[in-house]
Length: 594
Image (cartoon, rainbow, N blue to C red; front, side):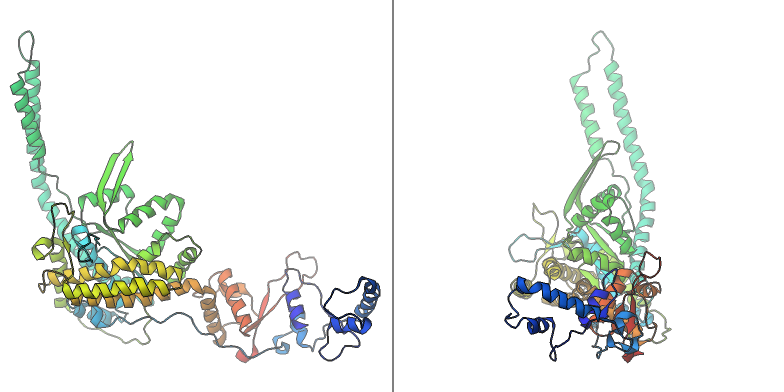
């Protein structure tokens, strides 16, 4: 009876409920027993006989006339609007987060040349080391870019370019993800400024060479014009003279010194056309850095951002091409586009994109954020005020400088006549490590994984592991430690990174699998902290702007979970007076928490 009444009161316009006690019922009996008392030959399973219905309806109407309102001291008073102390409460169930644990970034996972500096940054800032480390790896990969590649198989020409996309996920102003990303970015900005100064010094000489070439071309044009005017009746130009002038013009044009081009390593925002120009001027590619990736993702969600979204997805491969033709601008052509991406994300703002991916609107954008990390927030904090380790920081900067100028063929990379770029392969032991890892990925992980988003994420791991191995190898080369083929140590470190990143991917995608449960955990914490009165409305919750409980849908979903777990009971009051809109549902808290 309580269950039926509760369902009725859950309607948008709930009716008034009364109790009708049918006479002559046995203990635990119901309306079927009551009907069988009046029609003993009916078995209770077949339809009630038509001949018996008139008197049965008459008897039932007589019973209903004796129905009474729900008494105030009954457990059914919840449905009539009484206080929570008379509810039929059961023991509340435990509410625990379903967010998976993530692997901690151990110092052993950091490339040795970067390790002392990254540990120092994390310690002084009292932040997880994940953010600075991931940012450094994305930056290193962007400087290598399309300058070289790795061919992971022994004989096959499958090629992977080590530009990677990374995202640092965490609550704003809590885990200091922006300052953590800023530490490695400062080194890249310093390198870009250094190349900017070099450009300014080279620009004057390049301008002079351009003026000299223009003057000589103008002289050729002048000679051609003078000979074309000629003297005499026919004014014919000597074929020999014309051929000589043509040869001079072609030679000057082909040997003209190129215009000075400033090498850029990163940009914050640019249009497709401007990015294509940058790709032509920087054949290794460019890093796009956004302190908050949410704005970029929001822009790509709009119809006017669809082309840019597709452009970036193509640039993730590192070896795509792009041709743009506009009437006013003409043809803008890039033989290859190589884009690295780095930025921060807030968990709440990431939910929508993950939800869309779960609904089938997934074009692989989230899976391309291969170096996305969401570490645990520090459990403790201590004041640290020490000098930065400048020697370790300078060592990392020297590595960046070396990577920017590295001639990969001089360091063991191979390049055939028809190869677009130099490439590395694994050594014998490293090849065995890769083969074993790839076989496990294809035959076990992809086959046994049930989460469709994780299946697609694992699919991108085929390029992630080789990319990381190449980045680790190039860091060691720039540090003067190794040369030649990629070692087993670099391959094993890349495998360990894939395991570490898998744990973070599972945490990220779990947010899309059970967002209502995570919202319920947050609301349960507020209830236990006695931050809400009993009863309360959903509006009273989302008006507070609490993390993870900022809109009506989140709060309603959380309340529904807590109702199922015996933490809350909902009361809908009927419309009274002349008001057209029913009052908001109220949620009563289990007295266990009061």
